[in-house]
Length: 261
Image 1 (cartoon, rainbow, N blue to C red):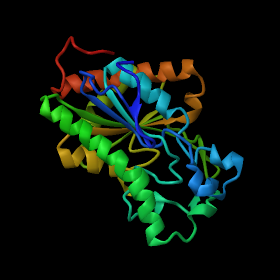
Image 2 (cartoon, helix red, strand yellow):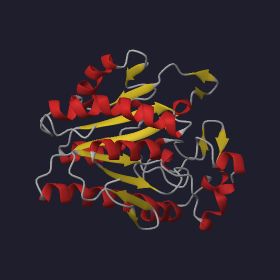
Image 3 (cartoon, rainbow, N blue to C red):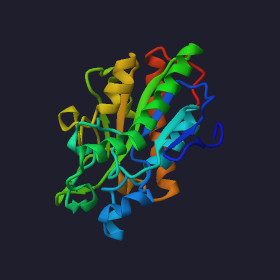
Image 4 (tube, one colour):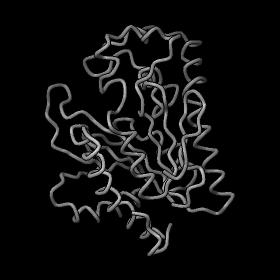
């Protein structure tokens, strides 16, 4: 790792002095629920299920940080408390139900309760991202914004074929460049804007932290059955690095020969 995690209670930051272009976000890195929310009324199983976080995503993001000499900003709070990839006005920022799982602690939240969640979880995360972008701009360091997620193999009873999803909003440049490299991975099922796309409301971070700052940006989704062990994570991480590093060079964010992959 470039350095050790430096964090407050709800945000983890790794690689503040990284020299690579990759600024990696992991909004669903943890399933922790602060005690004041009384477990949101969830069963123990639901509280650690894929509804509560993205299994494997944080470790995958850390692998990318290492191979790309990048910076990681990760939320340490369950997305059922607040989903940092959603704006405060979105119902899905604090969902009353996630797939088949009811979230009693999110039912009938008042405006004050929703504001408290946003102030406690969302704004610190966004402030950490903005601080990292500002610091990179101050030292004239090129930046590509990459968000890292995992998804469940079966959703509402339907098996998903996609193994790796490369998602984008209006700016397709980084996604296009990565998808050109997908030919290096003929054994993988790689799709554009699947299993989700902008129409599903999943590109908030790309919009707020990427598009708004004029940064090339992409969202990576990996099916979580491919991230079960450290060996799995290293394998997928290396494959993603083989797509990301040339894409960053192609966009002129890093010179040929300086790749860390």
